[in-house]
Length: 307
Image (cartoon, rainbow, N blue to C red; front, side, top):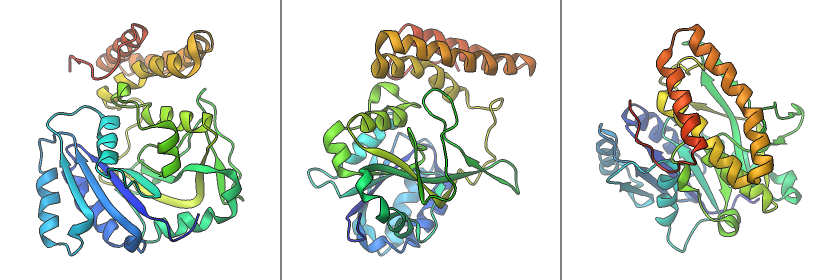
């Protein structure tokens, strides 16, 4: 990887008005800005002031030539959103594409440090790379998101190494090499929400690419809210978390290993379900069951949810 690479950024937004200004401010401070060809904001039919704030920014900024806003008429999911961002580049996809949530704050030397850290790992054919992700657990403390492998076990991490290799990266921010998109295609829109980045990373690994996280490079995720714990999770996210594991298992592993995968994941389901029952969060427990049953019935895409 060289510092002469062309970079594109795709940001998915949905009712993100509280996050837009901090994100744009961090973009303005990126020292790598001269190598960013275009920043595409894809909005999934927000009902707040997200798009208004973006358009207001365009009127004031001196870098309007690198920013594009796509306003979708309906919310068709995060994968659809990212794919539309890729299509916005046409046949001229940059060497690397950074996919980002709106609720992220980047340090000024983020891209410089990322490429610098990966110089010694060119022989590993790294196709997807992400940073350490820090999330607020209360008003004063941050917690690092520690990725697990596909079967729910902690992934090995050597703290003395510049990078460590994982099954997948956090979906809030990850850099993808152009060759990955050319070889495996884009994001699977059947997931709608959750498991889509895991599917993408898994297909990349099967195609011969490595997935890495840079040890010392970190970003701040959803800085404006305290992170949910398992007992405070969004019901929509909870639903797709359990529904989509069936889609992933069938697609990636097939009927035999896929069934084993679901059986092992079932113990995670039971543990979280019991926690909701103990806390008398009946609605969340019902959502889990609904997601599990619809996944069992092989439902795909957007769901009609009773909440």
